[in-house]
Amino acid sequence: MAIKEELLRKISSKEIIVGVVGLGYVGLPLAVEKAKAGYKTIGFDIQPQKVEMVNKGINYIGDVVDSELKELVERGLLSATCDFSFVKDVDFVAIAVPTPLDEYQQPDISYVRDSTIAVAKYLHKGSMVVLESTTYPGTTEELILPLLEQGSGLKCGEDFYLAFSPERVDPGNLIYQTKNTPKVVGGVGKDATEVIAAMYRNVLQGEIFEASSPKIAEMEKILENTYRNVNIGLINELAILCNKMNINIWEVIEAAKTKPFGFTPFYPGPGLGGHCIPLDPYYLSWKAREYGFHTSMIESSMMINDRMPEYTVERAGKILNRFKKALNGAKILILGVAYKGDIDDYRESPAIRVINEFEKVGSEVEYYDPFVSEYKEHGQIKKGLKELSADLLQKADLVVITTNHTKGIDYNFVQQNAQYIFDTKNAMKNSGNRGNIELL
Image (cartoon, rainbow, N blue to C red; front, side, top):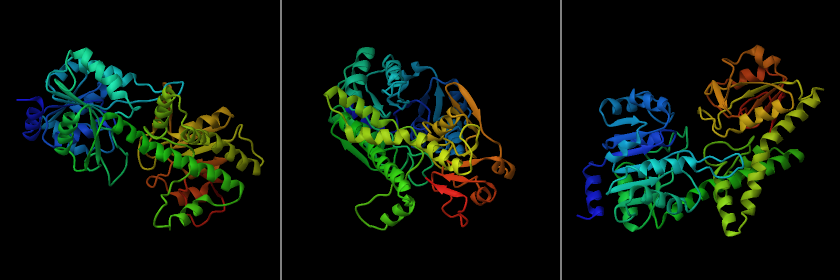
């Protein structure tokens, strides 16, 4: 029986054993969904702490239900390991590891490369490999494919199937999660696309779109997030202009939203955060240079968004000047370090850059975040305040809201006790008394 027919049969009969490399915000929810669908699933991670927690049924990801994880582990459907030799037992491998930027703002694909090399050693005939990590167009065929063939001695398309299927994780989204978010699959060859798409259809509820190649799938993921980057850059630039013109950009957006067609609202803020939107355009612009092409519009939006933390501090300085206070020595209280509201994820959070910018000019900075009690940056741990008291608010020269949390912060209490508030996220839009509030 040909590899295609055999895999389709095993997928249908739930004989497939699934492996997920990387048990983070993308990998763990994916592993849970695979196991919930009835496929025995093995999670691989280089961090022993994560492996131990999974094997004990202890959840550490917001989008995973604690009880579901525990039940799957107890039933033997989900386990985790640091030992990649278990890849030999796996039929479907999803690689969902970080793709950050290095110190020069260039793609760091070391996690993807190292994971692929580790998988290749134990890859067997009849396997499916899928890269889910966001990356530049060409990664699957130019990097992953040769590494797998060289490391395994197998031939792609004949002995194993390879595809790119970008993750679409939105932490904290109460409507769309891994289970019901539409999925794009672009395989190396039609058979690979068909078989791997069939695997996802047996697990997920969302539509599965079959792209004609990995490059299409890789580029569409970049498009998704660059679209947001460019539009946020536009609205951030307009926010800066509107401030100079004494126009409320937030009300402008609300007015524009009344148009039922041709307009999608985006909002300004102290910068971009998360695991995709601030990073993906850099992957595209880096790859574009290989073709002698400069993504001028994209790079312009990146520059605007990258400068927003500095602009936030500049605006804070102007507010303090009105009270004859300097940034140097000012007591600044930051509200929120998560990159978006009501989650504990602080990856690439602009709030952390805002804190750093304040500290550069000599401000004394403390932060409170009901979701993030501490964060780690460059090996250093910064602890947040345990509670938000009236005394802390009153002693702060300026309170700066950098995350729009809707839970865990009483904004009326903040308004009543703070000397002055710089609200960069319009979190206090429902506050009746706005005498001590300034918007970005």
